[in-house]
Image (cartoon, rainbow, N blue to C red; front, top):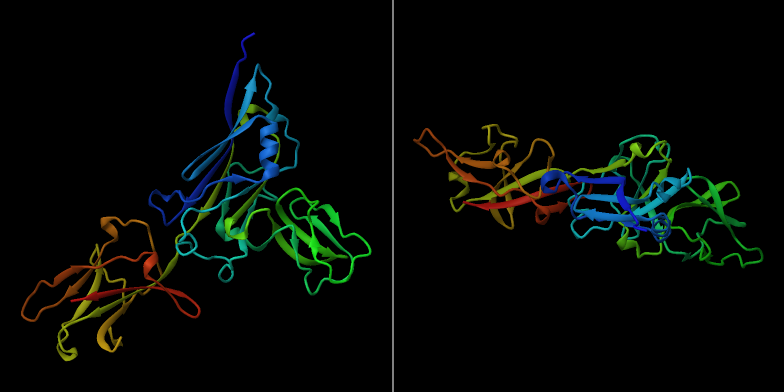
Length: 335
């Protein structure tokens, strides 16, 4: 008997980022957690990943599709490692503070499982510490501890009785990676992401609650992760070989002749005079720029009507300069 197996789209996840050309976050890849990989494999699903897009396809054989039998409330967990070491440099940090090496961004569709498509912007991300299955007991943890899965409030672990007060946390019996709450009685001791991976490999973690479709025609379910490009003040330091008193009037203009920068201010840069321009508002950086994004330095020569123009370099990850409470992008130009 000839088998007839057809694969159809089950879940489509678009990865968007304002920095990368075309808007697709092609440095991100979708990787299922071990439990999710087993669930998908057991329901004859395959992951197809391309830059900026991840799709899960399900098998249908002679009218039978095991994927459609996924129980209501199934949690699909993924990590999104980045191949770009500058990913967080070029990403606008809408979350409080900068991420530590042991932190990750956590996104979920909790409370929005019926939305189609589901938009998951980085503005809704939660910064969580990533922890392995064994870690030191938090100093403020007293009494017998328990563990609750954040997504569905399921209790999954309770600390064995009779352990020393400072015994480390051992979660080796908890099989599923994901977001958990470590509890002492009714108090939350630690809100964290449990992972079998090194924290550095989990810059973004994603959990999607699955609500089974009424009909196969309702597939694929769609979700989108949206991340904005890093924004900051652009600063140009323009050095001249002329004596400072003879510096010609300078102005920075965009492609339409407008000036998005304030007036130049004379400063000492490395002991030498320079004219510094700062953007009037934060500007985002991009992987590539169009002709409409160009900036020109206008030099007004005495006795001439039309100014001389020089194209200016545009900001990239290598121009970032961290200040106490902000990020600037600094470029240096010599006339």
